[in-house]
Length: 272
Image (cartoon, rainbow, N blue to C red; front, side):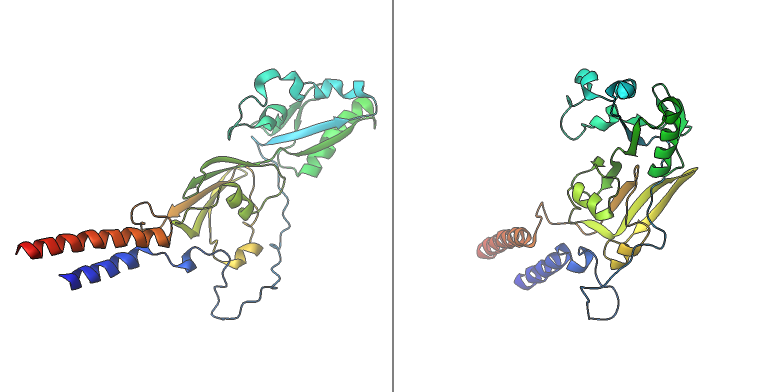
């Protein structure tokens, strides 16, 4: 009986452990055992430049030596004029730039006071800035300066993330690892070799599979995330015993289980 319990324990222990190879990022997956930590991995051949899409939010700022010239453009985007609508929510859902930024509609247009609707979808930030600058120059020549940029990168995490839901990075350029860190990292049970990235394109959506274990990711087109990306991580088939999150806790749990079983076996043997 004790031998049976011993072998059962070995099986339980083996199935409750997760190999480091399955959870370590950026491994050298080649057959070579040498690892060059100074290895240079260039970005993808196509330089990263985000193209604005419908439903994006952009921040447009106007500046001039004469404050009266820009007053009509900045009134709606000034938090002081929005009362309690900005900053009152707090917590994870607080997104002030949603209230102060300009939303691109389904037709790719952004509506700016006095200028009306201007199409900027399908353009880079710099191209969109030049278009808005040209429109405002019709009224004020070169007296008003325009700055246009993406109002943060909004993406969604689902599955084996420690923090799921809509996430925001207040930058105009972020990597997949920025997204992971901003989401509280992945859980221990996440399939890091099967991260599904759901991305919007002009006229549709595509699903890309990413291997976070492979260092080649650093040079792939998916290294940088984009606004409206959805990141989904599948769970491994293996399941942890109880709620243990590390090896020490798992061993303690298994030891307690064995002690209980041995106690029962001894009691039964004594009765016999």
